[in-house]
Image (cartoon, rainbow, N blue to C red; front, side, top):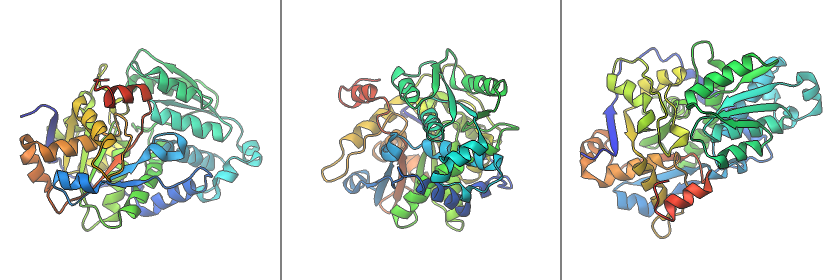
Length: 398
């Protein structure tokens, strides 16, 4: 069997699903209403790849194209902006419904709330989203990036007005750095899309913010997808998407598949162990999928995922490259999707599963066939344009 995709069906024991209400349709609607108040808000496209779906032997393949989100080339701003707004609302004794963009950015609210410093660790997209949101609201922001982060992504964050450095440690260590620095800073606030014991409220708000993307996609899809493929780093996005669809279609949810970068596949490792406990990946975890290079799961998301995901996949970089190239050069009359390394991984996995008989057992287990209608999320565009060109145009590895 090819080593490009490792997979396991979910046989973990179910829990009481205490975290599923976080992603209720009602909570997601609050987040979407908030995002709709931004002057930059537009619904991002859902690309219907009709000819590609025929080639893959599927009824439909539709991809949410987040390269258009708020002009930031990635979806992450949805979570960071909503979490910051929820935090400011909480600190000023208001409901989020009282906090549309024009209120948040008003001099009156700024005078009432004062000045905070929002800290975050990032591989690129999340930090840029937090920095952008903080800048829009006149707040300070400090971002730390892990070893191996590109200078292009660091400069994108710095251009949003944040202090940003590339550290000599991995992502999970950067999370610990910002937690310490925030604790030592007057009105320092961690805005991180991973949760741990004692730090769960803000990550839940971030997940709800991601729900805007899911709600838009469901509306655009026009019917219940039979399958949803979603990528995972710490699992916040995956938990948000899976949680939304599990709530939206309680009686008949889609088959949900989580895709991780193999060196950082902590969720996959937990599923392999099948006891329901968290597993951690550590070290440098080399992969081109920077946005998925996170080795310690979000405990809130993990509870949702182990109750509602059918299969966990760990994929190598060649799967991401395959997805990037196929989306950039699809069949005639299908829309091109400029998808970055982390954005293209789920589509690359789907294409490999459908065209490589090494994965027939997985294909059969997921019931992927001519009647399947698959929803995927391209979570980023060419956030590092040089690397995207190297991979897609020049056929390089990175």
